[in-house]
Amino acid sequence: MTNTRKPTRSSGTTEKEFDGFTAEERDAMKEHAQELKASARRSPRTAKADGESDVLAKIAGMADADRVLAERLHEIVRSAAPDLSPKLWYGMPAYARNGKVVCFFQSAQKFRTRYATLGFSDQARLDEGAMWPTTYALTELTADTEARIAELIRKAAG
Image (cartoon, rainbow, N blue to C red; front, side):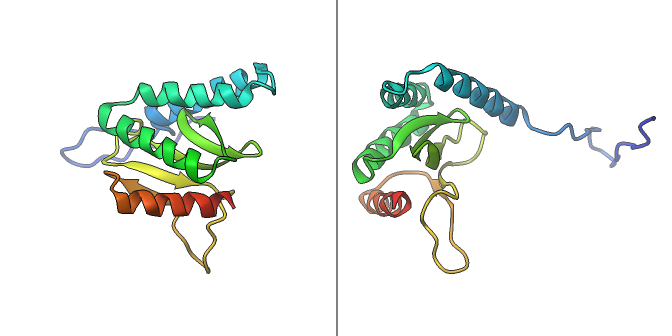
């Protein structure tokens, strides 16, 4: 069977075909596969400590602006919801309950975006009516934003 699709052409632009995932998305999936392999090799007794050291190492390798946000966010999560376990999730610092990710930090550098984000999975207990936010843009952490984040984390952790 031959490919009958023809690329769309527009005047003055470079011809470009959609090939699926971006390079950043492919890298994140590769990181996730490595994380799964590493966690399968770990002893259940050391998994929590190993998760913490993995997250701290990932944060230490971030660009300065993202690293500052991630370090402080890590402290907020650890104090607001000590029952959540740190772990890497698609190469991002994340915090899980019973092995399932509740919240995560996505650096701006990772996907080349304008701002870092604090995201919540469907495991987060943030339900509020028929619609609620699951991702928040972070540009800096003030006392007010830290208090709001701590409140969200406590609620999400349930």
